[in-house]
Length: 218
Image (cartoon, rainbow, N blue to C red; front, side):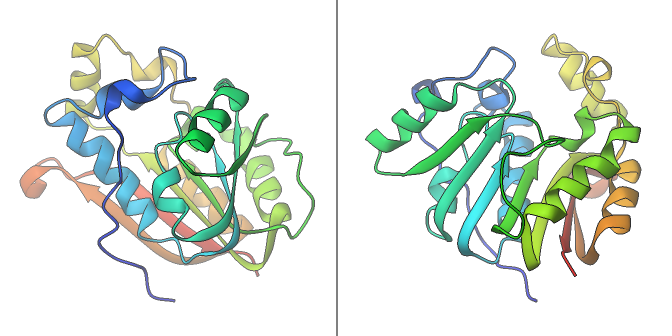
């Protein structure tokens, strides 16, 4: 199953996004250096998506992926703990994109079995504790169609990343509880691996900064 390539993130002006709280990372997307990292991690996930009738994005936040997802899927569903589902749904409706958004947790999703072609999670699973990951993947597999794909992205903690977030007044250790290794192990227990991809630091001097996993339901 070859990955799609060159899916450049389609962004609105940063000031236009609405319906999210102050912790939403959309505020970082326009910054030098770290903004490029934020955009590229999303693009790595988008490049793994194969399209279909329905996609669920868990942790849709500001809906930054929706312009890309509308070109790949018939219907966009979204689930988020804190973002205003109603406000964001209306915002994108005004921009010509129909979505079905709800508030809720990946640990208990309000969807039937075998419903989605793809489930997308960008920088979500690291916020779970390691002992919650198996339940999360169990729910993801439950709502996927047979042969459906889960694509996730999680940060690989590096000193540079921690330092950059500190400069922005953000202590990632207060928010990230599972490592990329924890997430990868849980994904392997739940599904079949298709591919792993990584976002490397400039010049690869600091190694990988972000890991993307692509697994399917068997």
